[in-house]
Length: 279
Image 1: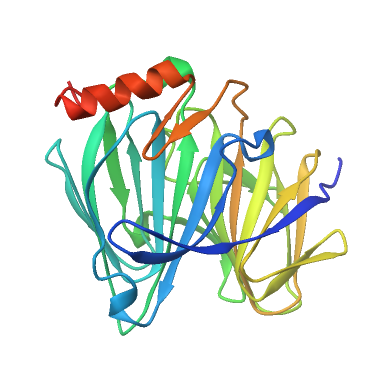
Image 2: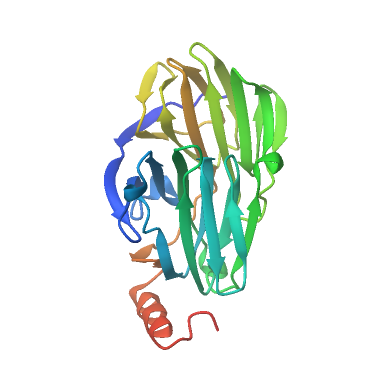
């Protein structure tokens, strides 16, 4: 088996979205090495003014979003009538398909807010399917290991030290595996993933080493080819793993819309302006 090594390390950058919500962001809309993922935003704050405006009603077309909360709540409402309040340790998935209009409101828990929103691309054949939504509270997330070395598998499946672990989210437009690994300093894990998957990860706490290269907190790593990822926590660490089948199609991004051509983007804008986005 081939061990994956680090191709690139990218530092997240501060940004704002919604109604002034402060985030740290890594995006790769025009980078095939990210595919099928497009972006990861980290929301982390102890100050209400950093996020109080939330994300008022807004549209999407052509993508899926996966929100995962380590600490705090995340309220979701959409045009389909879905209302969900994600709590600490849970995840929510939405496929915008041909169109969705939704709002999201982050809320602190015990004076803390810490979570992630991940954008996943949809292949052209699925961009105009009806929108879908599902949430998974913390007890539904599959866990493997102990408090000192814990893997939480949110979606897809992967093999951990020879044991297959399957997450609750299985509906993504292409095959993906999304997981959260938490470990104290000195702990290791060995993850097996299909060789055809592209693998990226984001370190949200401490630092980890992959094949001798350290990735510190707030950095995103793109890994090379192989079928095994070996991680070592060089500090008490937390890592979001993003792995999936790449989509070999053009990506055209404009605000909340991700399509395959500018003509499709223009159509999405026109549909939204004329109240037809979700028809």
